[in-house]
Length: 114
Length: 115
Image 1 (spheres, rainbow over the protein chains, first blue to last red):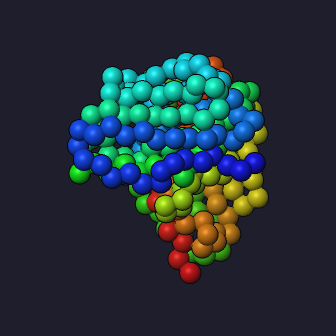
Image 2: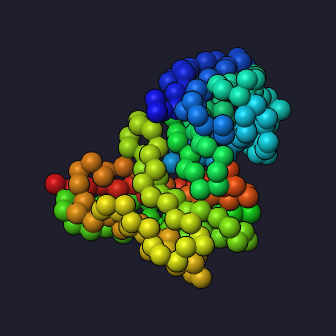
Image 3: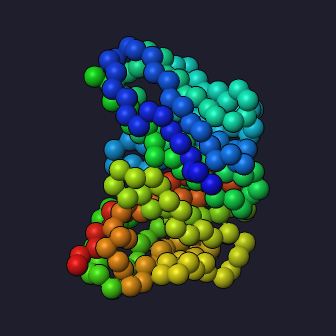
């Protein structure tokens, strides 16, 4: 169990630029989740994958956001035309698909928009 | 819609003492799970303890235990013999959506442990 890995740890970019984050889940976990955490708040659910299928997207995930998990292993989260309000910590988690299995979180990617 | 409420933004405890963090929730689901996660500063979120809603017995994990009151929709965390390493932000969360895929978090309680 090497844990959930996220890259990069920090990303600073100018408003209007595109950014992409990567998440590598725990190898035997077939579920992968993305959350967003703003300062002073708990994480908010964005989307989740069961293997390569994206099964739900939150209303928080606007058209500028897209997530993929092409081979059912790692996942990417892309934000196009970034805005000031996108500044947040983006957390990835993974789990087995059994209902009682907890989600294991990565360290997160902190996005700062200038 | 599910909601999780943590009414204590900050708590403090003396080392070796006991502290209780409060959490209430609301859901229309009958099958759900409740969790406490710990997030130390600049470090990853770690699962502390979990409780299945269908189990009446309160979960315990070493110095951590919960008081689960299903009718009152209350799920508090008790930390016994507090240690300096317990200092962190604690989040209460609820998992639902059939197979527990979507976690709804509270806003967190920042716990300070005083030596």
